[in-house]
Amino acid sequence: MTAYLAAERQVAIKAVEQASKLCQEVFSQLVTASTLTKKDKSPVTIADFGAQAVVNAILEEHFPEDPIVGEEDSSDLQGDNGKEMRNKVVNLVNSASDRQMSATEVLRAIDRGQYKGGATGRHWTLDPIDGTKGFLRGEQYAVCLALIVDGHVQLGVLGCPNLAHSSGTGVLLTAVQGQGAFQRLLSGGPETPIHASVVKETSQAVFCESVESAHTSHSDSGRIGAMLGITKPALRMDSQCKYAAVARGDADVYLRLPTRADYEEKIWDHAAGNVIVREAGGRVGDVNGRPLDFSQGRTLSQNKGVVATSAGIFDQVVEAVQKVLGDKAGN
Image (cartoon, rainbow, N blue to C red):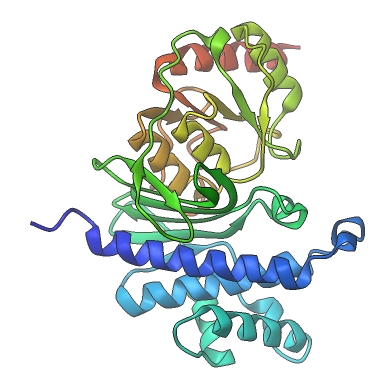
């Protein structure tokens, strides 16, 4: 008997592998020492478009009826103004893909990501490069792909080209609902199961935080850590690699705290990491401890913030988060 979502898992892995290869190619060709100092985001923009085109084209080939919730659309690549970047994207896509695609096909593939999401049926969600500044610094970023069925994440794949593995650099993490979570080298090789830590005392826990303070409140995280007795240095990295760190037991707590009251998290920023942590034995919810609700469309409109931890300390962490955020609201 074929395992649940076996075909989807295989196709998703292929798509993330090829998109990760494209991103690595962009970094090696286009990112220079001056890219960050000049705040030049063109390399990551090209990689974003290219990775989305590669993944969407592969999904369309194998699952043509499945819609996709993606981060990008092709408007910046259209017409004469977009010609230079469009040509670069098309060339990169064709260097990373099994088949050659015309410019029209590449733009159409990118625009397959405009689905609105929702609570019924199947759809994929993609973040072609999560952690843009990490990408530009040559640090952590991820290609993130997930399949949502009737509002619940059932499959997640993360390609983390710069994440360490015992056998090298570059990790592919995969999870299917009910089947556990696994990792292997992005370049290939055997999969091994991964497990969140079994730490039961928060004083023994390790935080995993965003490098970018715009993504979460570091000052609130510091107060929460002090309340929990956490003294170990925080692991700081960009992207859904933080979910990977919790799923592998490298860290025990990942917090994404609200930075403003009206912000709604995007589903592509959390779907793949969410199922990977849960299948590794961890827990994921919002700052009120509620499960993340992926049935609301393109955002997690019914949730505020994200808390991902090893299972044994989730409730304690949520309690501390609520205390700190409550005190802050009362001031």
